[in-house]
Image 1 (cartoon, one colour):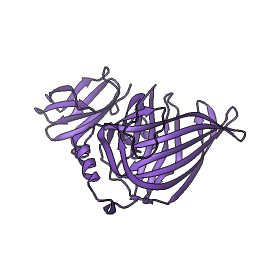
Image 2 (cartoon, rainbow, N blue to C red):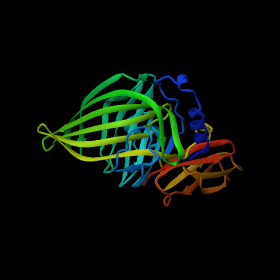
Image 3 (spheres, helix red, strand yellow):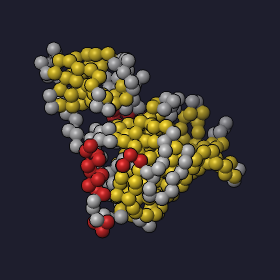
Image 4 (spheres, rainbow, N blue to C red):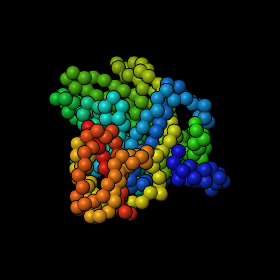
Length: 319
């Protein structure tokens, strides 16, 4: 795990319980975003000790500034995007303000965009133990030429506060357990479907996503509910530092996101290097002119960080 994150978490574990307010406030998120690795399982751990949970598959996801993603233009109200490369790249877009965390829709692995006309608030701020939150949204979107009317109804209850223990000695002392039911109903000329998502999520202060959650997906049809699948996911590692320097204003890379080639702008004579989200150097050189061009067609899709001197800029590669 990233040493900076580990230090922060273990310091939090040393705080006396009475010093921690049992309430989630608006998070202070790092402007460069985060890269997380979650373990995914078909089991559903109980309680606050998940140290024996096992992962069937480790999934890396990036939580990036929305304007650095391929579909930024359609989600101008979002601040960050969750990007997952699993059987195709999937995007989910969120906004954060002092009143709550809003969900603005996303893009599935087939490239179908579901853009919300308004946010559905998934987490209000502040949110305290015993609070109940409800929100709903109704809208129409185009799914491959088929107009679909979607209704979303969400209810969340903050049930308790505690310390969550995860595999690999990862621990969060400052965690709220939230029970949520979300019903999504779609109707069109060729579609009539309902999906019920029931989750138990563990939210830590200043983390943009749950650090662990249990979920059950069920199909709802003609008044009957049938379980489709159950599972859980839990954070295993983060590879980005909360103490990193902010993005520089002068140095930049374009086009961004990039597909095949990138032009990077910097100071002539300065050395530069590009690292992936795990910190590995994937390219390096020296600016012979203001603009340096290079090929990224063989790079894996994801976020990269270009550094020259004390300046850093983010580069996103998509294929």
